[in-house]
Every structure is written in structure tokens, then in C-alpha cells.
Length: 499
Ligand SMILES: Nc1ncnc2c1ncn2[C@@H]1O[C@H](COP(=O)(O)OP(=O)(O)OP(=O)(O)O)[C@@H](O)[C@H]1O
Image (cartoon, rainbow, N blue to C red; front, side, top):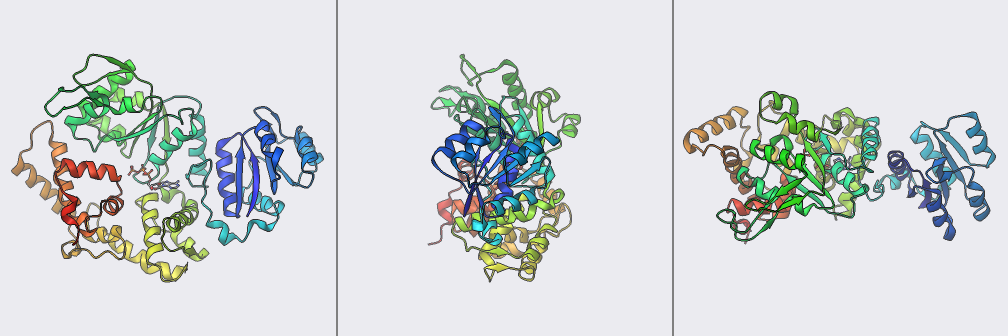
């Protein structure tokens, strides 16, 4: 595989180039300055050099003489935003292999670089199996919509501004939050994620701010809250739109004052966290309905990043699918490839569950496909069985969706493959539950979630033979979250282990 040195200080462009070159079977080593370029080139030659012109420590063209002197045979491709005749002339004067004014056609650039680097890049099919990782960040996407997201990410890396990530479930909000942390100046600190909707209302304050020993019944030891755990790093507040009102007030107060106090404690603890929040809810109607505090919304919505749904960026589907096939293979599933026809067919699907649904589907495909190369004909029945699982009236819940999510090879308990249950049934069940249980005011939400989780977790754990990792994967939640909730619900996963 050929290796290319990319000198580019614009991270969003670097990410896109890296992804495109990975597609061409070219490995990219990315640096951001002339000094770093020269350090890399002091000891080794690359198959090609791709360089921007305006770099933080100088001009990529003016300093190219030293590169030529050291490695006269190494082809150089120049990228430039200074689309003037002068730059073009200077680039050509250096004897550069090619010169690309920005904005350029990324595919054309990728092809040119592969050619410059010699066809050591292998064939394209092989290339597509390469993980598309930029600076350790597996955020895949080449669509203009994702380039806008990348650009927004790069704008918040050198500051601590609060970021609010908006988008449907499964669009990659958490991944973006992690990217902001990993690429930003707080990367050496912790990244602490809290699902604010999953914490029972009565525990949320102690979870976020911590508590002193004896602060309330059951507080047998001092607990350090998420704000403190995230000190020096990033606190990711997920599902912020579902945060209970009382906790919203406390959170707002903490953000305003820049300090927190543990429950039952006196000491003021100064905050040293970057806040990244996310929600799949449209917050404006929530504010209008009095369920979300407007002042908190303005505190959080300093830099909004909107994640486009996958159906609005169909050109990302193929590259994502190949990425997930690669990660499935890395995790021990059979290595599969898609024909162009199969990739096209995937791009035409609605993907209502966004990238998460595509990822689950691809893993299932890796597991179930009969041949290593999957064409459109082989894909069709798998898509049909998925659509059958999901092609249900809006609001309705089909147990067969569970079968789809669980993936092939799983035998489901008979109860789970009964005919479709309509949405009305679950509403009826909620109403009946409210009437019968009369949950205590102030904790109705937590009690309802617990009532739903209990049968849900029981069913999924049973189908997974008590394997918590597989159950968490099927549910699409973190294993620790599942373990914690099972604990709180006093459900023993051991009791589902098949013996
Ligand atoms: N652009 C992407 N490149 C690679 N993987 C992605 C991308 N977007 C999402 N994923 C993967 O899809 C899955 C869902 O993403 P993530 O959990 O970040 O979504 P989310 O928007 O936070 O969802 P939710 O609102 O349900 O919490 C994860 O496994 C994530 O790694």
C-alpha cells in the first residue's frame, strides 16, 4: 500500500482527503505545518507529498525546494485556496506533479494522488476495505452536508464554547461530541458522557453534582458527580431534551455560576469542563409546551451543530457501509464486499434509524450473507426482511422489529414473533398502567421508564441467553448503562443464562 504525506492545516479538508484517499487504497499520514512536514521527511520518503500552500508556519510552495533536494523523485501535489494565476504559476514552477485550486473535485484529487504515488495502492476493492480514519477519528462521510459538520467541528476545537448537537437518533451526535473532545485542546482530559434521560429524576442531581456521605438515605459514601469526573475534559449531556425540569434548573444554575455543590455539601467546586449537549428532540416546541427551560436552551445553544439525517446524504451510505463491513471484519465477522449495484441499492433505502440502522444492517449482512461478495440480488431479501420488520404503520410497534434488530441466527421466543401489535396497544397499556399503579407525582417518568424497561430487558436478555454484551448491543445502549439499569431494576442477568 502506498503512503502519502498530507500537509494541511484545515482539519475538515484533511478529513475529507483522508477518506477519499483511503478509498483509493492510499494511506495518509497527516501533519499540519511545514515544521512537522520536514520532521517527517528527515528520515523517510513517502510515495507522494500532498501539500496546502498557506500553512501556519509558512508557504508550502516557497519551502518545497528543500523537499526536492532531499527526495528529488518524490511527486508533489499542491492544493491551494489562493486561486490566483500567480499561485498556479509558482506551483507549476516547482515541477509539481499536479496543482489543485480549491474547491477541487475530491475524486479527481484522489485519483491523481494515487497515480502520483504509483499504483502500489492496490485495487479499489481492496482500498475500500481500509478504515476511513482521520487522526484516529472514525467519523465517516464525504457528502457536502457532512463537510459542513466537519467544518463546524474544526471551528470549536480551539475554544471551549458550549456546543449543542441536534439531529435524529442514530445520526452520529455522540460520535461528533467525542470528536470535538479528541481533536480539541481538552483531549488529554476525560470525556464523560451522561444520558440525562436514563437517570431517574430523583438521582439526577447526585449523578451530575455528586453527594456527600449521608446526604440522603442510601448515600453510604461520598459520590463524585459527573461534573467533577469530567474536570479538565468534556462533559457530554446526551438526550438533554428529556431532562427532568428540576434537574434543568440545577444545571442552569451550575452553568451560570460556573460552580457546583455536592448534594448535602457546603463546598463550592469550580467547574472546569467543556459542555457538549445533544438531543434528538426539536427543543422549540418543548419550550413552548413548558417542558424545556428557554434560558437553559440559550445557555446550551451557543454553537449548534445539526446532524443531517442519512436519507438527506445518500452519497454517504456507500462509504459508511464499506467502513462498517471493515469494522465487522475487524471484530471477527466474515469479511464481505459489496458490488457497485449492491452499494447503489443500499443508498436508495430510507434508513429511518440513520447511521445506527445502517450499521446494524451491515453487521447482520456480514453475518448472514452466503457469499463473500454481496450483489444487489443477494442484498434484496435481507432488505426485504428488514423492511417487513419495519414497514409498519407510524406509531405501531412490531415485535418482528425485535427479530430484525437481534439479527440472524437468533431464535426468538415464540412470544416475540406474534403478529403486529398496534401503537394503540402500547398507549392503552400506558393508560392502564397509570390508572392501576398511580405512580407518585414527581417520579412518574422514571417509574414509567422502569415499567417499560423491565419487560424489554427481560425479553432481550432471554433471547441472548443472558449475555449482557450482546443484549446491550441489540438494544443499542452502552453495556455499563444496561448493567446499571439491571441493578436498579433488581433484574439478575444470570437467571437468563442457558444451562
Ligand atoms: N459518520 C459516521 N461515521 C461512522 N460511524 C458513525 C457515523 N455516524 C454514526 N456512526 C455510528 O452509528 C452509531 C450511532 O451513532 P451515535 O450513537 O453517535 O448517534 P446519536 O445521534 O448520538 O444517537 P442517539 O440520539 O440515539 O443517542 C454509532 O455506532 C456510531 O459509531
